[in-house]
Image (cartoon, rainbow, N blue to C red):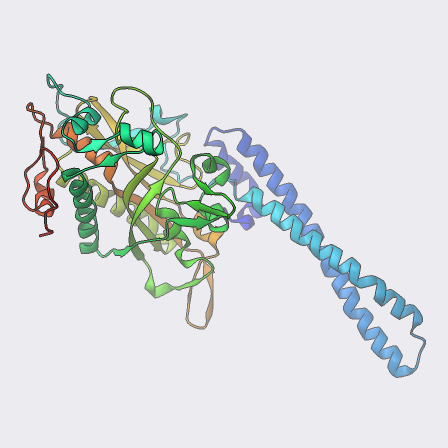
Length: 434
């Protein structure tokens, strides 16, 4: 949620910033928020006036009673006033809710470093690593390879649960766990605290961390409850300190979340889409940080560097793009995507999203920074970044490390987590952790 005081004091600045997003309805939304805010402030003044009148009337009744003056007219006025106060206070609450619902839909203000562009075709490449591998004869889609080796079953999963789900089997399960532990170990070494968050979140905090009007159609809602299956651990991690004042000296707070995530969105029907790339259920290791406002630009680069390190150690070529104004999303002020090279597809595909959300999420969640005995006034910044989404990383590994004989080489960095195994060739007993 953006700062309503900024919208009141510098509306032209906010409007100019939103225009960079190249989405005209946002300007109408901004106009509606300002109108609702004006109506709310008017109702606040009316409620304050009636409360003051009620207090004054109480004093007049007490004085008249003490002086022995007639009370009938004053008591009649006193009897008629409470319903008017209650009505005015209810109008004040209703108008504030109406304003805040609209305010939650106003996007975050963009950082000046976000390139101007209409969509993902105008994102700007800012770094590359590794040499993309050329096409190789006989290279097969990852889903076909995994099914042939008995490492995954997509057809039976479709029959059991519907399209977009999967069974992993044997060494592929161990590879998934190896990726999780590898990313967790890397981040723990760098000062992050592991967190296993709830996999469901109430509607109230969800509305604070993302725009449900845009996101709700790709989320799973639990019918009969105001609960949603999480789409990423970013969301419950952001809500961890909802309504609290964080000690200034305790930040930055660096967390690494591990979660199963659920999304309705699904890929297309092409030969390279069958499998693990875009699915309804997937596991992700996520970086998340609470910090002082002045720290967030440097921490954004730190999170990006951590995510890059994951793919460097996996020896998978990638590039980093600075996401443009038309593609950056509602919550982020600035975002990088890391796109890994998928050898079978001969294309870069997104594997990491790394965002600086500035004070947008923390303000909506009522989180502040302060010191002992002093109310918090500063709103912290929040940042998030994928470390690894295991399903997409496994697709990249299968494509990058696929051998002519159909087996899959295990990236050297993951071998200690697989008991020294060097290839994935079919189901086998679980290997002990090193």
